[in-house]
Length: 203
Image (tube, rainbow, N blue to C red; front, top):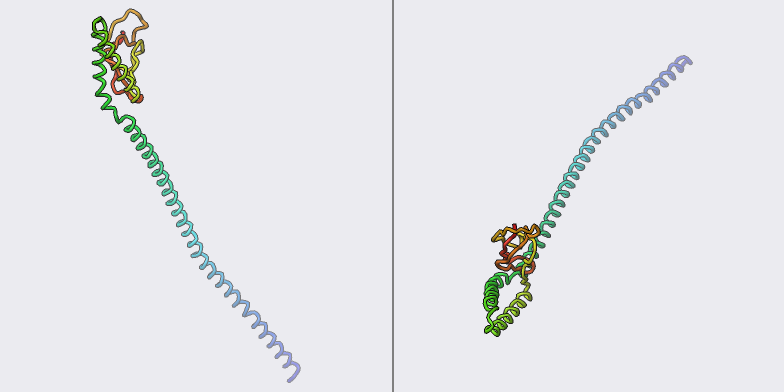
């Protein structure tokens, strides 16, 4: 082989080696692009799945908050129910004898009328003393059971305690709007009015 042919052959081999070296670079670039596209394609579903999970978590938190509010509302309502039931039960126990005691009040009225009728009778002193004894004992019994008389002497008319059955003209300005006379006494049971006092009011 001549020197010229040898040089030509060497140049061809070098060119072929360069071709072989450059070709993989093109292939590697294509592979990198493909890998990047695949990674992006894989990332998109992953991001969508995260968003879906976040949405699901938010819905669960909203549902939990709603149930918490409903639970607190029910607890408050139940607590009010218990308090109301206890108050009603206490009221029933406290005023259970109301009707019985209310029925006795006319008897008390009769005692007062009887004492009033005989107070000027000198021959009836012993009868009067006996009736007063019974009357005082009866009043004490009522007081022990929570019954007390509604005040009417020189007090301002109170619609919650008194029942006006007559209006009486008065000259004294200080008497206007006040109880002038008591027609029938009123009574309370444990601070609850069971019979309003029937009164005459100054006007």
